[in-house]
Image 1 (cartoon, rainbow, N blue to C red):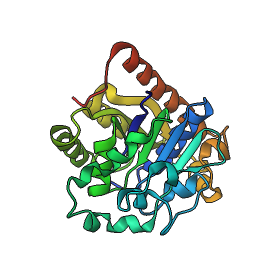
Image 2 (spheres, helix red, strand yellow):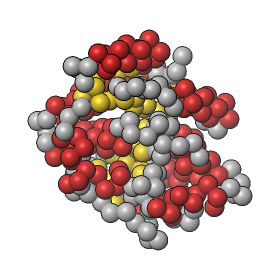
Image 3 (cartoon, rainbow, N blue to C red):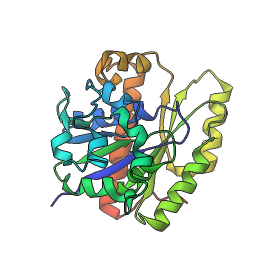
Length: 267
């Protein structure tokens, strides 16, 4: 039976392009006929809105899967983008830490729900910018993590904490969890600061950093207001084309993993 590859897109610092990276990577892979599911675990629901779906309150969503025990397949929505599906978020996710605190092994709820998700090639989980049960559920259920880092001052803020969290998850709940790659976002080629941050991040992460730089491009923040990924909103824009290249890198690493059994573990 085919097993979907599960990616968490995570950074404990907000505003780094996490949701944008999630939905555009998912869209790029769907464009090459990979069946892809986006799971929105952020109470803000930005990934949900950005693929043209609506936040669901009290019906069927990621909250009811985690807390209510709903079957995943009953809560998934098909988007207007072929091969792309979404498990919508709900503002009720804000209460998950309290509601699941007394449950037995609450970190495994999402992993258990995904056991029946064998109809997808890839699953991308958009994590909230905080460490709590939502992020722990995502990392426990994932094969690997993609870490967006913005090319701005204090770029590595939150990344060190995230790496500590990943290390703890590896030791306790998910020994197979690895870092697939680090993607640099909001790059401005005219800025010496951006170039300096790229250099610093590459020194820290080495060849785990993807070659593709996601530029500052007005089309990227415009796209969600139209309920579309930038890949669909303006395919020819520099922002969209950068995600095409990033998706190609992700698929290349996936191919190397399948051929060589090589994983991109954090060193």
